[in-house]
Length: 375
Ligand SMILES: [Zn+2]
Image (cartoon, rainbow, N blue to C red):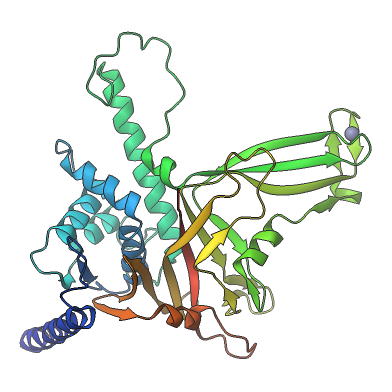
């Protein structure tokens, strides 16, 4: 058994090597970007949800830079963030340009933090990549907030100067995770009797949008911001009228994030089936995106976004399937399928829009899109 394992491991490493050098040849020595590394990640048993998100984040340049900068700070006790920083550092400092890395320490830490066997990211279940992204970004933000709080308590500001006036604690300063991914939605409600508009803001690190057959991301975002009428039993309590009134409600983007992470709600609970099913709908995602559902108060509603990464779900349902990542690096596109890395044409992205046919639920379709602002 042991021997068989070893032989098959060696065999698989050999194919990895062949694949890696094929990629190097495919890109060519002249075109290969300086200081760039394309490394596949070993799958530790259903960890593709994790590998695909990590690759997408690695190619979100502002995020990568912050993680690598964090690695340069004085060593802290091990956390999911230090493990991620070590992983990114190890990819960025490989001697070879292409290859495979086992993200073992990161996965071990992830499993440890989530209570092996009964946790959120149990080894034996196929996990949801969006849930993982959310968990990872929130965990990093919490760790950074905790560290800056500790530094303030020690009388030091993050830049190393002494803080002389920290008597009344200011509101928590946003971390770089917020600087990169956080946007703000505004929920506007207009009373149809007195026309008073009241609005409530809500921050987000990613946006989840409903999907429809044969549409585009822009259409999905419009749907997200469609005006809803609150009437009959759903009437709205208007402070001006001091009574329940009919109202119009709409959700708009008030502050546009630097990196917009869009989650397509492809897994839907079907009452009749008592389980989640996958919506393989064809949803076109453009290489360039502008938001049309911004509020009048937005400071940069014209912000232009470029697609930089896509996490793709392959398969028929949330509990069966596979995740891969497609990323843009310099001027070309790469597909990361665990330990395999391939160069693909930009046109090949169309294959990941989804399916026009209603019958087949089995598809390779865009699940999380990462758009980076050009300014
Ligand atoms: Zn009113």
